[in-house]
Amino acid sequence: MYALDRSFESVLASFAPPVVGFLAEHVFGYTPLSYGAGVNSAGRDWANAAALAKALYMAIAIPMLLCCCIYSLLYWTYPRDRERAKMDTLVASELEPIEMERCHRAGGHAGRKDAARDRCRLRRGRV
Image 1: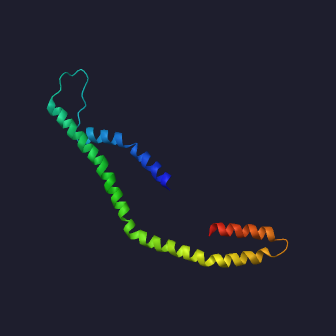
Image 2: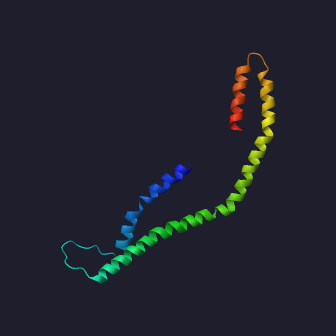
Image 3: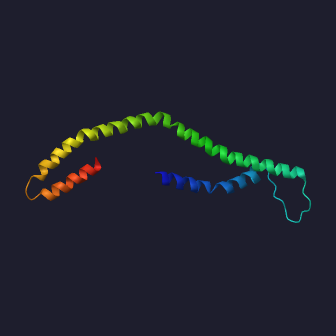
């Protein structure tokens, strides 16, 4: 699960530089420098720096806000999931002696001993 999370995050992170560039140019008014234009004004540099700063802020703030909203849902779902996991563990521990007894009884029959033993091993692996 952790590897899936890491790969999903890496794929989404690869879109960040083009998004920042698009936001800076088309939304916040970044004007690229043309080559051979001569001396640039300090005002334009400050405006470009401000546009890049705003674009970076938006590219970070919106995904973080989305993550906070999604993770806040865990406050409602986690207690129920925790109780369900506890009940599953309790049921499994209660059923284990019954399964063992059933396996021992099934293993005593002649001719079916190996098949019954394999079935019991499979059941124990699931529990």
